[in-house]
Amino acid sequence: MPDQLAEISSIASRYQAFVFDLDGTILLGETLLPTAARTISKLRSDGRTVLFLTNNTTASATEYACKLTHLGLPVEAEDVVTAAHVLIELLRRDMPHARLMVLGESALVRELELEGFVVTDEISEIDYVIASFDRTFSYDKLKRAFRAVRAGARLIATNADRFRPTAEGGEPDAAAIIAAIEASSGSTCEAIVGKPSEAMTRYLLERLKADPGRCLLIGDRLDTDILMANNAGIASALVLTGATSIAEAESSTITATYILRSLAEILHVHD
Image 1 (tube, one colour):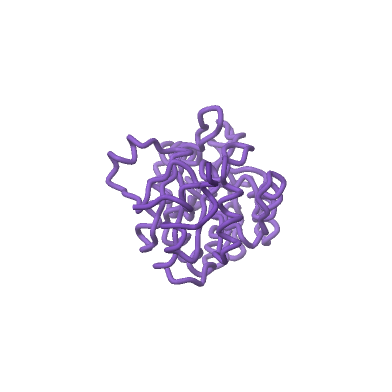
Image 2: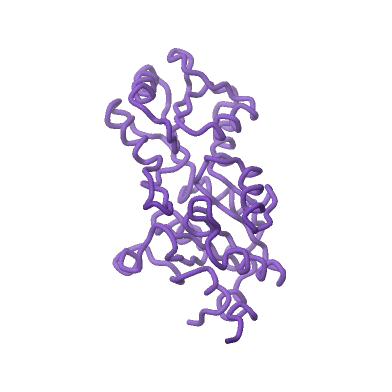
């Protein structure tokens, strides 16, 4: 049987830049999804620009690049954009010396500290409470965030994903943490910087330096990946390897340009 990835056809030939989500699109947990490496290798060999875009802040861009490379998909840190990049840009603009409480993983804390921000649990000192994916979230953390927000700290978030797709069936994401703080404090999250936000869209387009009409954004979520692409005037491909089923895609008011069973179809699917 001929190799289905042997030649670029329909979809790949229409676009110069390809932006891939990570969780549920390239990765599922700690495993590279089938055909991801071969598909991206083929796009690169034909001169296409490839970037990776994620709301996940459990690793830095450098750590993601190392992880993907180790799994068999060579990636440089400059090819990865995370919600942390957009968060840092927002904080630099609005309050470059902000003191932060971070409900998030150690990788996010490290990135913020490396950029010169002070991370603290002293309620009276906190300018912003940052809500993100946090596998160590607890009642004690909620209580401290509640008190900080009630004392005047501003609540912002890296992302509002409801869950992360995993091989085991998924796990709650930052939306649950945002909701807990909002419900208890009576405050509203002022900004969510990850997909599908305008802030992340601007950041991505600046990094791409490409005509949006020649870009394709590929992801597994309608309410983040596909909505962001639609809002930005970028073509989109929903891949059914992560958070969204075909039934959910067909019943949603958010529609993708393409629906793919796997990434391999970028190279051989026709209208």
